[in-house]
Every structure is written in structure tokens, then in C-alpha cells.
Image 1 (cartoon, helix red, strand yellow):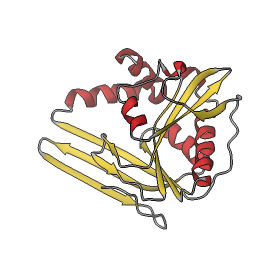
Image 2 (tube, rainbow, N blue to C red; image 1 turned 60 degrees about the vertical axis):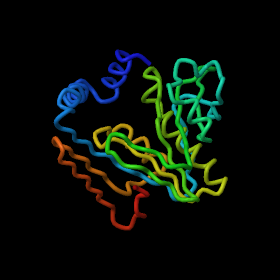
Image 3 (cartoon, rainbow, N blue to C red; image 1 turned 180 degrees about the vertical axis):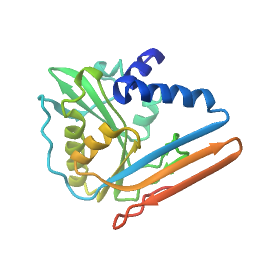
Image 4 (cartoon, rainbow, N blue to C red; image 1 turned 90 degrees about the vertical axis):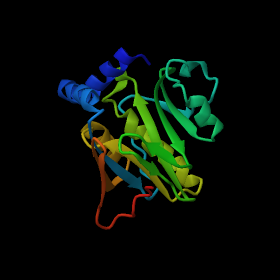
Length: 208
């Protein structure tokens, strides 16, 4: 995906103000960084969420020609490491992807690792085509994938979302996930501070 397309997609998801804040953050990044992320957890097989348009959810395998427009530079590495990509097809077109890993995964925005336990999984890099947003595809995929993972013996499923991305957090919660902790990252020059605020009654976030 080209840089211009990325900015357009960001503007659609976060709005013009969010895009301006993102650009401003990029400009001052050499000196100042600030990021807040929520980690949410699914602790039981979810109720399936029905999207407002029919979709088919299935594993997206390496070499699938429909993935050509979505595949990032590191996707071949992800597949080689055993990560699984789930896709959603609408009228035969691939319109969504979400990745699942059982291995450690780095969140660059807050400079921390998510380290799932032996019976846990982590969902990351979720994307829905801009033309299909607002149709409930994201929570439908999450609930379907969550059910598949629990059927395979997973006990907890984790997912992270930027604190300002309210629409994505709402979609994640529709799929049965609950907020477990918030991670705040700040850097000014050589000064760095990370703070994790856990939610009462929730399991500790698997961060390292």
C-alpha cells in the first residue's frame, strides 16, 4: 500500500483531526513521542456477530492471488513463522484481513512486546477495506476467529488498539473482548516513560 493510500485510509478511520495529529507526531518524533494503547482480552468463546453484509471468513494462505494488493513486506516471514492470516470475502472479493500469532509480538507504537502464554493467542494487523467499513465485518471476523481459537484449546485471546481509535475499540468489544489494561508511552529526547494501568478484576496483560 502506497504512502498516500495509507494517509487516506488513516483519515477515513480517524478523521481529519486525527490525521493532522498523526502528521504532527511524525514531525516531532525525533524529539517527542506519545502513544496510548489499550489491550483487550477474550476469555471465553464469543457469540458470533452477524455483519450487515454477507461475508465468508477463512484462512488466507500464502500465494492466494487475491492477497496481492494487501501483502506487506514481512508477510512471507509471518507465514514462515507459523502465524495465521484470516481473511473475509464479500461477493468474492477479499475485504479484510486479521493476523493471529501464538509467538511474541512487538508493538512499535509503545515499544513493548506482547508475550502470549502457551494457551493464549494475539490478534494483530487487522485491516478492513475502506469501502466496507461500518458494515460490522471487523467484529464478525473477530468473533469467528475467536471461536475457532477456543475450539483449538486457546484460553485467552489478546488484541491491542490505539486509545484514540474509538470505532475499532467499539468493534472489538462487540466481539466479546474486554479492556484489560492501558499502556502509556512517552519519550522526550533520551527520557522514556512507560506506564501500564491494569483494569480491576482482569488478568494481567502479557507484556515484556
